[in-house]
Image 1 (cartoon, rainbow, N blue to C red):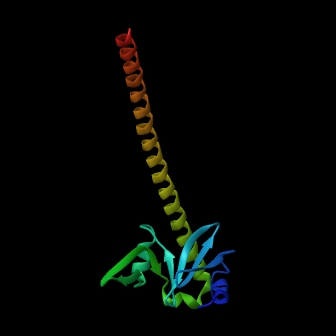
Image 2: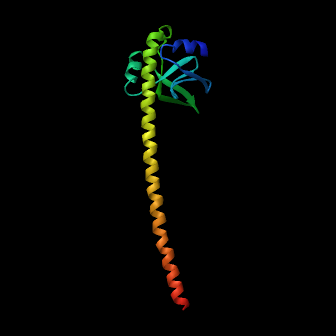
Length: 146
């Protein structure tokens, strides 16, 4: 699969960006990656809303072997081969994948905001607690010197 084939396949979806990624390509729209092209197959972003559709088609999630173990990436599922000749239906699947990618990005951003707020509160408490202790030591030292 080359860029020209991918551009034609996703033409109905709208403008997409195709970039080299790993040993294949990443396909994105509006700055959000929604498809991977690896090992001669297209994998679309999926979530709990769209995985049943992939399963009904007999599709599988992206898998690879590393250190003798099979790794499965449940967020990307293989586009059914029957769709490679049907750009109109690919457009529908691509829109669903793009929506799943947006939901994942929103969920990830929400988790990052929660972590930053907790760290800020802890840092503030430590600074406030140490300041009075230093001032108290200076007062005791001054009284003993007189």
